[in-house]
Image 1 (cartoon, rainbow, N blue to C red):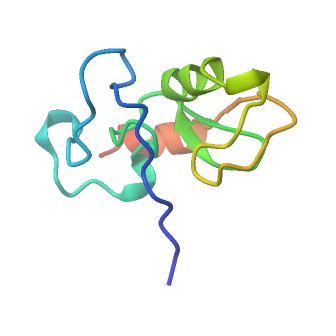
Image 2 (cartoon, rainbow, N blue to C red):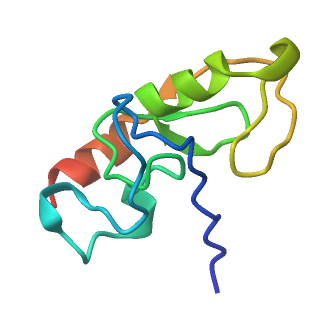
Length: 101
């Protein structure tokens, strides 16, 4: 069985609006594969990026997470592991998959 990481909430949606509804899906879709959902915003990723530990996030959500780092120490939202870099790599493969749904 595959492990699905918990969804983490910043308390606002990736666009900076109101509270995140963890059941929320773009376009009202309920049968979206979990791998298409950002662990931070719980929304379908439009611009997925991979961080240095290999976790995918919506770019706007993970950059907000990094910007809010306490004491300048950034962490991975899913593992809470300290990160040595804020490097993000676009995940073109996942972006193409999401676009096909």
